[in-house]
Length: 97
Image (cartoon, rainbow, N blue to C red; front, side, top):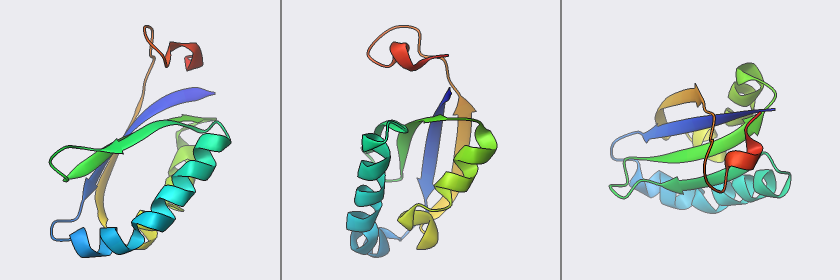
């Protein structure tokens, strides 16, 4: 499994839709965390996006998974940047391949 850092950029002026969709989005993330696929996630302080850290078999599998996010289905994500990441120090280092 590979660790990936995923950055979401939210659609401007999408606060109301995100607020409405957030419970389903967080439930989806919670299920992935319980399954060991999601290592960490949270919004940026300015509200313009979020950082998520996943373990996945590959980038294609991760991309397929991200399309199932209720935020993606609601159309509030303007952009996604996915980067393979190798945490070497700290709490997430044990997950690096």
